[in-house]
Structure formats: C-alpha cells, structure tokens
Image (tube, rainbow, N blue to C red; front, side, top):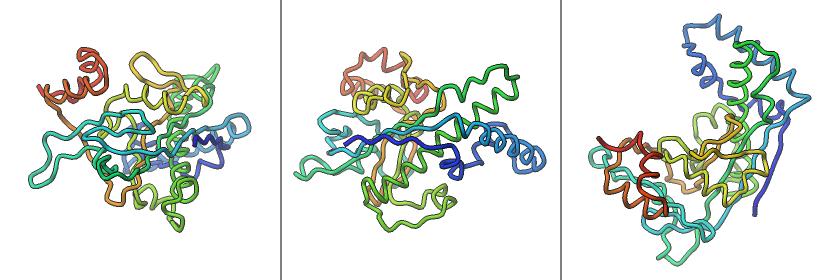
Length: 270
C-alpha cells in the first residue's frame, strides 16, 4: 500500500541535522559566530515560510525477495551493485544481501520512498545571491528532515517493525535505529537512474517530483531511496566496480551499456 503525507515546516524543522547545513556553507566548528548568524537567518526564513509552504513524502512497504544481486520488489526487478574491493576479511556487500532470498520460499518486505518540498521554496522572487542560497540549503535540509520524520513513522507505525522505539532526534541522526534507508545517489546506491524504477513503483508526480533524462529530481530539494529493516543491515560504499559488473548490471537493468556507463562513470575502475 502506498502512503502520502504532507507536513508543515514547523513539524519537520526539529528533525533537521544542522551539521550538513553548515557543511553546505563550508563553515567548520570554529566558525561559531558565522554559524550562529546563519542559523538565526535560517530560523527566521522557516518562520516566514511556515504559513505558505509544506513538505511532502510518498512511500510504500512492498513484498520483496532477493535474487542474486537483484531485489524483486512487488514483481519489479531492482538490480543492485556489489562491492568489488572490500576490506580484508570482510565480504563484498550488496543491498540485496539484506533481503530474504527467493529460494527460501518466504517473502520479505522493503520500503521505497521519496520526499520533496514546494517548488517555490527553492525559487524566491527578488532575492539576492545570499537569500537564494539560504532558501536552497534550508529547502535541502527540510527535505532530509521530512525523510527522518517519515522513517520514524514507518518504523513505529506504518511498517511497525520497531513499535516501541523511543529515540531522541540526536539518536536518530546517529542512526541508532534498526535498519537503514539508503538514498539514491549515495555510496551504496550510486546509480541515479534508479529513480526511474522508484518512479514506476511510487508515481513521483503525486508529490510534484519530475525527473530529468539523467534521473535527477526536480525540485532539487528532493530525496528518494529504499528502507531496509534487517537488524544487521548497515551502510557501506561501492567505491569502484569493474567492466564485468558494468556489463552485468546494464544487462540486468535492461539498459544499453553505453548509457549505463554514463550513469556509473564516477565509480568505474580506471
């Protein structure tokens, strides 16, 4: 079943991880005064936007099994990449490893999600360069905060695999919850074209997200990805893959190899 939620800005603002906000502005921990001034401006902006704008999320918890390096989600095949250069004495991981294999004869579940903001939040009229960047970075953080709040609701209510979870927001930022939510474009899910598969399952247009020909989302302040509940699931990166995996992945995705090469160029071994 697919769910869709909208939030007032004041509902998700407490879930913002400000560390990444300051990083976007290249402000380290020593820039105390600059951070304080920027935070005041961000808080003031959110107060002014609160009556006009919302954030949105759309998600589904669907039946899933793994088949090799693929995850079959409600009948749709989602090929995953696998590490080819893991650390010594550690296995080469794929996200498919955290989903029950089809041969076990028992269906698992997986979550898929997307979150975004009102388009106008990113495009203030009559703003100078500082205000435009402030709007964009605040919108980015609000989209991520919406995902944080949504994932909390999924764990405790909609999926309900952790109904008694009682974490503070700082503990959530430290990822002390069960499971993971790898986002498209991040280290374990680097292929942005996966957004086309997520779109086919979720219908991103329902919350105002459109995709470019390269799989990038508009509004820019949008996030998409998977939710995996396995208690041993953890984040990892896929730093480099070889030509052999590129060919296999392109074949499993049903995408011509030259096109898939463009999507994966940043992680292809030299």
